[in-house]
Image 1: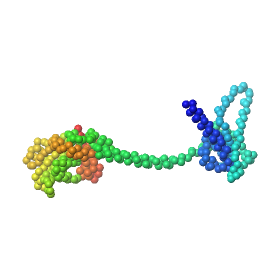
Image 2: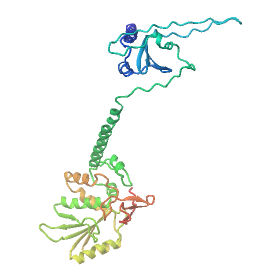
Image 3: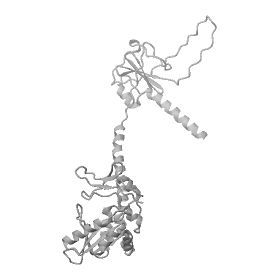
Image 4: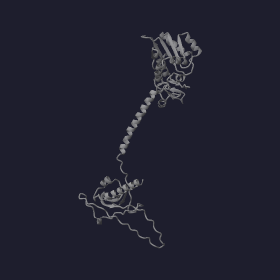
Amino acid sequence: MNAIIILVLALGLMSHQARAQAAADIAAGTHISKVIKRYGWPNSKLSAGDKDIYIYDGFEVTFEADVVTSVTAVASRTKPVKPTPRSPGTQPPTQTRATPAPVLRSDPSATPARTESSRSPAPQNTQLGPPSPAATIRPTAPPPKPFAGWVQLLWFPVIAIAGVAVAKLAIASIKNGNQFTEQLLGGGIGPPPKHHTELTHDLLDQLEWRRFEDLVCLYYRALGQRAELTGIGADGGVDIKLYTANAILPTTYVQCKAWGSRDVDVKPIRELFGVMSADRVLEGLFITTGRYTASAMAFARGNGIQLISGADFIRMFSGLPIEQQIPILTEVTSGDFTTPSCPSCNIKLVLRSEGKFWGCRNYPRCKTRIYVRRVK
């Protein structure tokens, strides 16, 4: 520890001596810009008339008309001595201060400096205090910051890198279907999604209507059947069409309703039967997440329509090999699978009227409205 202290003191002394020695290298007639370029901005600055005095560590430089006229080596400053008490009626002793001799070096190329007798004496090096009426202290200009512009420019790549990182994280989250994506993209009402390995009643209730149709379509494709979604817009009561091998016309119409635990009554069953009759399709499937009323089941039995409840579909889906179940569940639960989609515009709806119903983002051009169904 002592060696470190001695080293620090020695470095400070060497720096002070170097500053004092540097004063001898300043030639009379040197321009102020060269002094600032070499020694930097001064610790302080005094002005008296047309003279400027730059005070550095160990020396002072006097300028007239921005040209060096004298250089003065300055000893270390000492603390002011407290005045001694004096008896009443006595005069305080007069204190004198020696003026340091200027150190000048001749420079043949520089403009000859005026002699000491031809110019007014330079102000003495005194303790800084209130300026005298004859001398005013002008504020020192702040030192230039050569790298300030570069520092500002460096923020642009930093912000760009951060944006790319957030985008990559969001894309990865969409693929994994994790909670971060739901918060970023605006998830539906219900618990946050997770990585699903089996179809459960809770998961079935969380699926929005579009993802439920995707689930049913992928299930029948896994069985080896040709299944096609009817697409966006009015479906005419049919969501999926099933075809036999090499068939041109569909053999079965499928209607899907993601209504949570709500019971399906006879009205949508009759609508499906009406489309089947008009297109001369003999078989129909109605699949829902909930159950059916007695009147709906009675109508379906006499008109060639098979009713599949949520519990029935879970049992059917669980009969697939696990290596087929997981890819299907991963696809239907990727990203935001709880917020309902607009059937006309195929974009996610937004909550309206303090969360009472879902409305289309293209309102008023699209007036689609789906009332909120909260999952368990």
